[in-house]
Amino acid sequence: MAMISLKRFMNGNERESAALQVAALLVEKLGDCAVEDDKQELESFRAEMRVVHDAMTPDLPPENLLILAGSAMQALETYNRRVTSTISHRGDDFQSIIRMLQDSLVKITGENVQSVQSLNRIGEELDRGIGFQDLQSVKVHLSVCLSGLRQEIERGKNASKTMVEGLQIQIETFRALAKKIPDRKVDAATRVLNQEDCIAAIRNAIEKGTRHYAVVMVVNRIQPINARFGREAGDRILARFKEYIEAQLGASDQLFRWVGPAVVVIMERPQSGDQVRLLVKRMFDAPLQENLELGARSVLVPISAAWSVIALTSPPDVEKQIEAFIASQGTRDYI
Image (cartoon, rainbow, N blue to C red; front, side, top):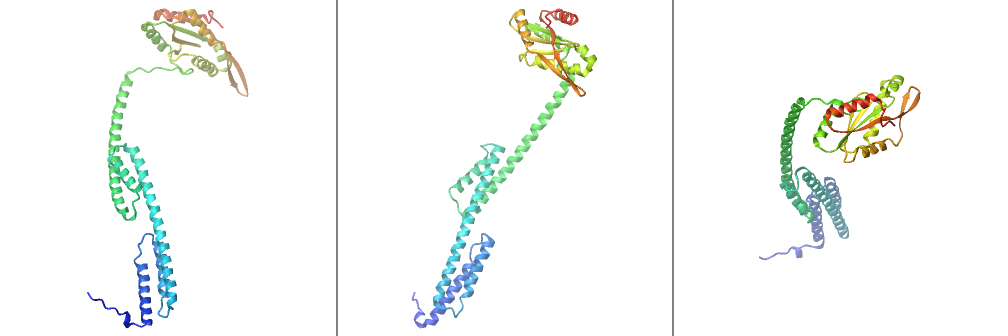
């Protein structure tokens, strides 16, 4: 096809005027057609383009046209650099959001859930450097993953509801069973089980067939302390004595409150009676005291006890020996 050039029919002024019009048109379109990412940045860029465009008047000297064109190019480069930086930061933010969703979904649903795998795939795509033009597809993938997340959360709610309902049924079952079990009364002062439970423990130990002992301990001077300082002071002495003895017992040993100032320990030991007596005697090697606050003054009260070791043979016989020792008020093995 034949091309007809009008250049030779135009004089210098006409060519300069045409170049000026073309340059002005390009500057105008650069501002109008710029990609909008950040509205404020776009308005600032368009304002610069308008300044350049308005300066391209018909009486503009030709040498100034190149200066204005350079200004337009510099403004365009600055805008492109800012937009690229914004896109990069946005991609980083998007990647962080996806990774946080990955971590949260893993904690909620486990590693093998399809939603987690989808989020992992998006994260790998971002790691490979997907640009701004692909963010729309990333949004679509993310929407699918979030839908999966909602489904997994709903499934978790249903599973939790089922588990709670099952637990409620079990609790009601346990309550029904608990009503059939007689209450085990705990001594108010020492917070241990009482004489009735001790007798049951003696029977169980004898039926077991291994060597067991009952260590009876009667705390001294409880009645005078009650008379002088009150029942609360006597209970404090008993509680302190229980704590001291309990700290020296084995894991399988059982401690009970009998009557009055007496406590009984049921212990399983392979040693002979004499050897067990040595073990018990060592429990009292260190002095034991309790500080009682009485109004504005305090009294340091020493704590001691009479004790006896009884080999378990038959429940009635053991019970008689315990009662006899308590009645004797420490005439044997007294310290």
